[in-house]
Image (cartoon, rainbow, N blue to C red):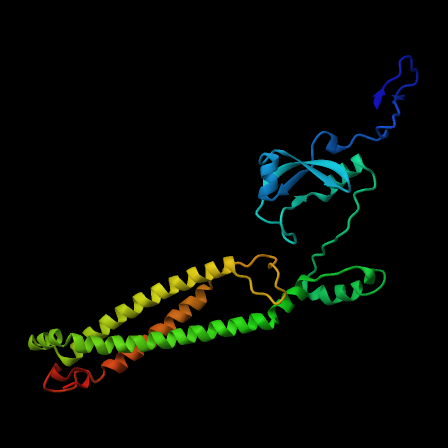
Length: 295
């Protein structure tokens, strides 16, 4: 198709259009569109960006059976609401490019609504009435509420909580056993300290200090191991009642307040256990010859 001013035309602004019709091509007359000079820009997933040669490359797409080219403007790890490779582009620019190649093909098959929480009930009621009742609808708020009511998820949380409590009980028992072993194995050193004038209170503080150091190091290592395990489990395991990949993907979050409260509770419990385990360790007036009640 060619557009040209006809020679010998006398009327100002007149235009002669000449074109050839062939069975192999569809001939159209249309106004020039912005996408004729600049391709629609799109954000794409990494695999598609690699096919296009990176940012700035041209990516060919097939939409509605028609080829459409877009320019890669950004690379994103994922696009919300999609799985696998996807393209995110301006609706107006992309629709113009599609309609330029094949008019009427750029039909919209999905609409997303950003609804404020206080308006969700009214919007749900409106979508349940004619003419929207025949549409397939999905609510992110309803999906989130359903996930929170998932019995398998609740069972998993209860199991993890039980394991955490069991680990705390074992840690407390181990701390008490460590204190008793310290009192028994270091009897000679404690006797020597007493011979140099150490009082029973000072000896109890020495034993308690060692126990506190062990407890703090163990708590720190346990917290780091827990965070590493949480990251690993989040990456390789997705437990849902629907047995499908979670969307959006699971993300590991660490609540600083929970860590601080947990550390404070553990510190208080450790201090109480140390004080309880050493309260009668050096009560014998004859010295540490009966440390921990042993003769």
